[in-house]
View: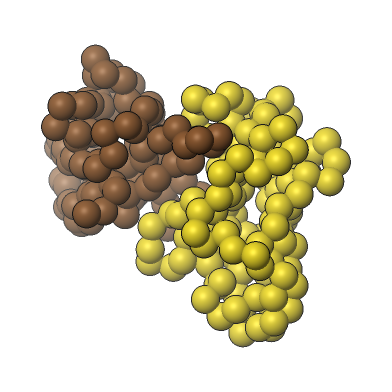
Length: 113
Length: 112
């Protein structure tokens, strides 16, 4: 069964450093998403991406964040200068159509020290 | 008011029993509804979509009440493996996107 994959599974970084989280969505999906979940809290939407551009973003997704689909398979989330409060689990998701279910990757646990 | 609200639980359920819980949502423009399940420190996994007429998938039954803006999930004949956090999820069509809004989850513990 096709699945979303994410790398790395755990990333530890120093405050102020840049990180890039990587995702490989399900191959025939067209809609891509990033969500995050701070430990003990609910899953929160960050950004959606379709047709090589951002289609919607939340208040969390400020200028420190960017997304890219550098090739036909990868979808990346970059945090330019990490803050302590960026520590969370980051989930990538993909969907086949705008109204379809979204399928989540296993997540990258980001720890900012 | 929270966009999607759930009783956090935990619901302690004897193995073989039935458990049911609800969630409420605030945005009347919400278009699609889902139950996801999340195990500790894992990704949300789609359990089932929720349709207006109600739907069943094995031991799981979901209901949607658009007038009252609530969604329910019922689990029959609970198994130990049903222990998880159940996330009520609502899809709202934005100007150009389809973000999912998650509730905080209802924790279910099935005990022998």
